[in-house]
Amino acid sequence: MKKILLMLAFLSTNVMATILTEDFEDAFPAWESSWLAQNSNLQNHYGIGQGRGNNPDGLWINDGLNNGNISVINFNAVFGSSITAFSLDTTTWIKGAMFEAFDMSGNILVSTEITNYYGAYSNPGSYQNISFTTANGLSSFRIFGGSIEGNTSIDNVTATINETDAVSVPEPSSIAIIALGLIGLSLTRKRA
Image (cartoon, rainbow, N blue to C red):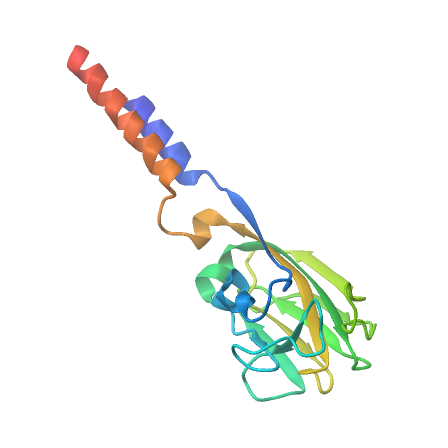
């Protein structure tokens, strides 16, 4: 019995990292049903269910908050707290535009100026990569400094998540392992 309990304790604390990617390559609006749109307020500048405009491989960003000079992308709390690493490519037409990201406690994880590559009109585009890690999740990121929405594009968004934090339902393989352990326990008890 002690062996089974130790095995169950190991399974319950086992952390599995998953890497999620959104590259906006599928025909629009397919990305809206993907992990990024489902776990944040990120929107297409052209509107929900709309096309990509003149951007062949990225997304013109919008946060739906009706302030075109700043775009604040908030993650839902459960998903955001599971993020351990984050990366995106961005390009803008706004000189002096800034990117900032915040952990779940509101601390700044990264603050950097975005180089304006004017790169969203080609495929592949010319983008600046911004990558960082976090021990306390990712609550939000923002891009600000001018007329951001409609002039700033993102692509190749990647999040590494800790699945034990992000998912509360055990995966089928874990359930199967637990069931096999319990069956083994019952067989050994019947023999004794």
